[in-house]
Length: 317
Image (tube, rainbow, N blue to C red; front, side, top):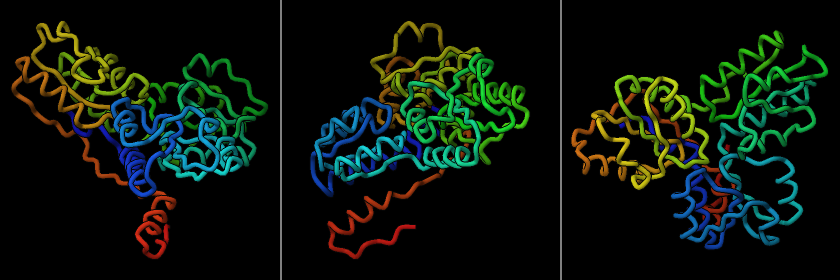
């Protein structure tokens, strides 16, 4: 088993926000889109009273709604305000960082190139910060097709859950096309995405098979499979042990198990137990990168907890 794996700080925070909201305010609590991209997590929270909707229009006027960890566009925020919704923002702070960068570059007159997957919730939200000056690219071919008003006033940002190799190649192509291109002061790909890819890269050469626990719509989970396959090791994305094809294990003596940043540990344990029952009785945990990042709760939740308990409001910095 690889470590780090599974929940990142942004996912822990988002799930905690939904649970605390349900405990503090009671059901129902509406959540725009999946709070994180994992079906097990979403179903568990739905059982507790969370109602997941696709758009703000699906939330009754005046109700309480939580934005998912992937963030939302300013248009969604305005729509919520117009509907009188009580908003709790569970956007990952590292996604918020990218939004702030997008606004900054747009105000400075840059054309923005947003590197990522067009249909991902995170890209939709970031694109909404400056839609008039932002173009999305998903590969090097997209870079070749780019046209901007001023080649000397271009900046790039990235989705937080990209493959490090994929992002590197696209950024290299952008720098060749626009030598004066600006970028973020620190990379936008989040620490958890990078750490999990580094872990796979470090053990893939010793494994005959890599199993990545995560849902199919989880970008960072899919990237882990790609990292393994790019290194020549067979890799599969699985929701749980039921998705394992016994044929994958034929002739295989060494299996590496990891999990995307939105996959709970209970599903990893389920997979490991399955492997134990199928003859893989020696389990070793390999820690490649130590990880101890934590994010605080948003002020809406802290203030709500204080009000519910009768305590004085907590100053949030």
